[in-house]
Length: 202
Image (cartoon, rainbow, N blue to C red):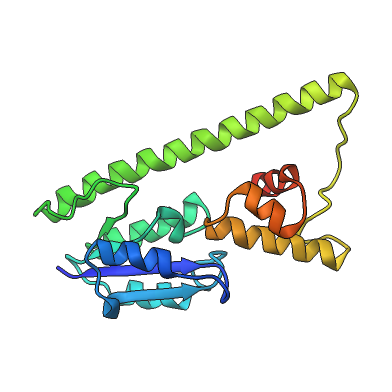
């Protein structure tokens, strides 16, 4: 059994040190760490991920700092986990209990799948709660006569290049997962509410 590590941030100017420190803690040697500095927009657009998926063998354990390092959404994460499962590779992350000591590959994969499903369900429930709170806020705002619908000021299709850049910067910082909403708002120069709106769009 070999422990393989995968670390990803969204851009060249972001640091992988925190993730690599976690991988070392879980027993991954530097020579087996695949380091990615690109957005998680697509699975195919990440060369180090592709190299890692080709490199791992049956019985190996893939270690990641967090599930969202594999992908930006549940579908991508599920696809990659299925690829690992098909190759007989176990998954280890601080977000999940350590099942690497389970000798039977089938049992280990089954238990890991169960835990990943639970975590994805929790994430889905949280997204649903956020949407419900958003809808409740709109209803209240409409009753008070202060609701303003319409397009986001900051988006990938914003006419103003500055607003497009703000959108892209916030998306990268959210994707990286190192900064809080307040930190992102302060660094980019927009309100926390705008950052939350962008996050909900993602």
